[in-house]
Image (tube, rainbow over all chains, first blue to last red):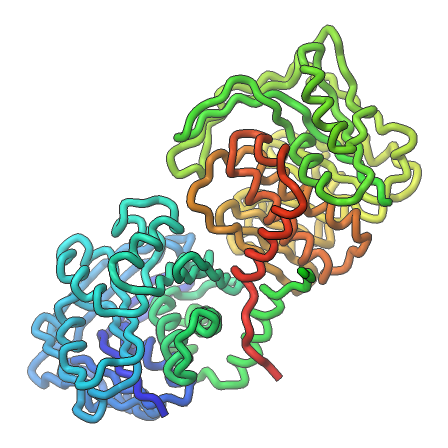
Length: 308
Length: 308
């Protein structure tokens, strides 16, 4: 069974959408990535940090999904990273209300020794220097490294971001960030420039408009599932990344053809995530539901034009 | 061979994009629809009106593509409909600079007698009363009627629009218009409401984000081809409609499964249209190029996940 190292935040979120609002609930990039990856037969471990205020039940939830949590440092005297945001009526844009770094400010990730030979590493959205620090701890070169990042690091840590980009195989990034990073409006041109910066695969996430995978001169497109209502988009991008890397770690096939399948799995997982607040939907998701939704994705995208 | 009646404008356009600007060039919904439909083995006729200022070479272009132009009324003392627009830098939004209705103001379409038994009717974007007038002239009920419309008619002729909607099988509409027509943000909910207004198939066009086809509880998604640069989006929606109806008239298979193929053909045609100003690209397009691009669409969307 492949090992998958997931580095990222484990956090509290407080979310307000047109459908309601939550108190502090379980959130964080690594949480969403881990829950999605746990749908696959992989040996996943989360590397993160929480404070003494972090409830044991949340950690139990993760280990109950067979996710190794020995790499989650618990700083007893500290407080857990907290993010609060409010979505606008279209659910595509949001305002950040509160960001309390807390224990994340001094986060120094330590990959457990028995995961330093992991086949796949998923670098969740964090300061690029922390992401580099994780790669430096790997005793064997991973077969696949996937990087997620955001515009914030382009603004304040661009050089470090460029350094980590040189060491990854796949980057996941949203459309506006791809444009900001390259100064190109066309996503085709932007993806080519990003490939020139390191990653041989570029995944551009477009929210409700789906995701594009680029490799050399080839492109693949996965739509988002058209939904009656999006209840809470929080974590959708991380859930996508978790489905994507979980599938790839499970299959250990890193060809373009198989990355297409991984994008479909990522989109499938993300389509569940947005149905309820926070991690609610992902906590109860089972294989049968995933299978049914993959069938929907096939109906949504596959056609029968015969070409000779 | 199926007959296809295309009703819509044949016009002059003057276009400004970040790549340049044109003088008065050939444009109009029926022009773009006809050029795209002419890629298929169908007996297509355009019903429209032009002024005495309309060059014979434009009419010759259409008849050279085996499009019947006997239904294009030439009002010698009148001037041809003229539209001028300027695209913003993102190419997704535009300002209308000039709209001169001219001969279109008194347009009273007459379907040639030998096309009144056509299997397929494509109602291009026009006043809904004119669209109804065309349907009233058909001596046999068409097997398929496709309606295109726009927000302008929702603002100023909503009741007439609702009347024509009751008599069509397919409506093509963009995402913002679907939302305006129904008051629903979710395109899934909007499409269901629109089906309740008449058309059993709803095609929602999302520009660079592709197109969705809805039928009962089923959905199908075709992306727009990711392009290095979009030179001029004018006519892309009409070209989509022309590829869509041309393919359906040719195959005479109006099942959901075949409408999926029609959406792919529509997206394929539209991907060519935007590569040059106005009708330039569509004028020279040949079957081999269409075939090659369909192959690209397959690579872009088809995947191999096995489901039992």
